[in-house]
Length: 457
Image (tube, rainbow, N blue to C red):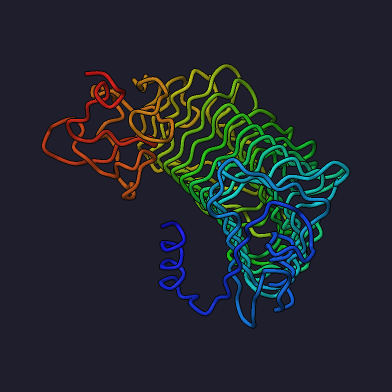
């Protein structure tokens, strides 16, 4: 039944001319023994030839990797080289892992092609030199994958994925798309999980980064471009994703010279000087939650005097940090506008300006302690946010909703149609007959029963 479904998907997906290769062995060999291994399938796809029982022809290739297996593994004696366009689809990240055999300290995959490559539905673990090393590729996509305990070598980039044109080994890439991927406990000097330097489009959606580390910069993501031409030509998008307990002295997510769009994402208990380090960057951060910092900064913005000034909008986010943490620092050559944010933690200084007049409030911000962020006539300073504890509340991402009586509810204007919970905006949360935006990342819908959706009758 699974193969019938996949054939239907293949026909409907627009690549009906693809050659199908079915891997039915978890051995790592190339030999005539009447089966098809992954290494044999990739060799057949690379050179459009038949290898053992792996037969192919000219055109795109789809490799089904142990598609009916459960709890299987392939131990690789050396790296798998991809030099032609291919999609490799496994049986699910819980059902198959690719890992290095004893003595293999290189990559799991090295990609060097001018075609598209997609890897999906399997797990990669234990690589000692960047699990996926990109030399050349057109469009590269990872979907429904997991990367665990992979590391780059000394002074190297991207523990899980090295696709860095600026400082790494990559020569060319058109785009990198990451969708529904878990990165856990990967490490590198630069970009503990992903190093993605260059001008190409980079997008992350519905993914998790947990306990990744970098010794220098970018515990989860290192995303730099050093050309100092128009910021508007380089795009980084992070949406519906979670970053938890990542550690680096200089940024969980570090970006330079970008148009950055972060939305509907959670940043929790990340350590180091800052969570988001945005240098010479434009764009927006919306509908996201930053929580768990006891020191350092959640957001750091700065620029270069020789380049275009950083201009960032920070809108409808929730900050729940404590102690001496700063929610946002605006440095030299940067301008930040804020609107609709809930600075709901116990930290005394939520917003910090290095130079005067670089932080602009457009109103509807609430600050629990002090008034470092709240100087517009429509802001609320020294006001308790009245949030419920951080929890799932029936969803798959941790949120901190406002109570019905919270001053956040129906208090703001200018929101878009999204919030981090997926409920959307605006709703009539206070029952006065008018739907208005709530301050912060979470919108309180009408007649929302938090007790019921937490599993209590």
